[in-house]
Image 1 (cartoon, helix red, strand yellow):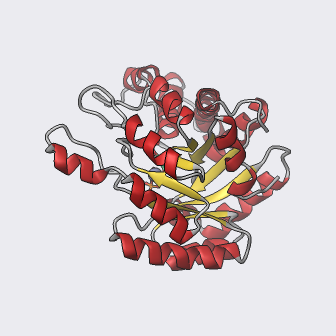
Image 2: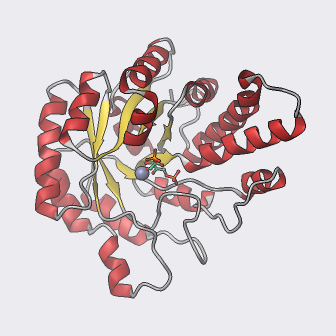
Length: 306
Ligand code: G3H
Ligand code: 13P
Ligand code: ZN
């Protein structure tokens, strides 16, 4: 069932769980995301970045995900991740996306509001939902001064004004995560205090980007089969659960899927040096992605909610 975010996220926020948004750029990853969510009876958001769209072709990726979504009973949203322009958001809406993110978080507040409002207007006319972002999702480096660090986090009062003025459907906040496999130098830490304050003021579903767990089980697996991913570190499950308890209703995961995919391909190729069938090579990768999607959805609490 193809749905927009409003069919799944407000309910998630009300009931204290989060829906997983997983990035895809090909057939195998999409099948694994939707297949695992089906088994778990969890709603799921299939996200494509601008680079993924360029890689796969917008017709190919949108038709594939929409087709799979329509053929399953669980709610599936096709979502543009980190849309940087009005034109790209419109292009996605034209191709049947049920949700778009306009990420103008790098712009000054007023311009972020202006661009987000423009996207909201065109999206809502087609019953497409909009996620926007306020705050900067940069890696919070250890050597930044306290003042500089604070400037990166979402300001709760700005977030309230932003949500009211833009009428966006979901809001991504910056509370200390960053994209990729190397999120923390020292002890992983999230500003749950800031999140609590935001959640007290902003009642639409909140979104956590850069939420991959980067678990040592998978890093060790990659490294065992020839990878080199020392010092990779993600967000521990207990911090994710705290974030969910405090208003996060959508959680983005890309890196964990990439790592699982890499672990599968590396293991398969090393163990089967005579094989050259792409379906077999990608088979183990798909299996590992399913395992990761199931694990993430269980941590998010979305299992059994579809
Ligand atoms: O938010 C970032 C996602 O991991 C997408 O990454 O732009 O390389 O597709 P990408
Ligand atoms: P990760 O890099 O932690 O998987 O975050 C993905 C993300 O936020 C996609 O928008
Ligand atoms: Zn992101």
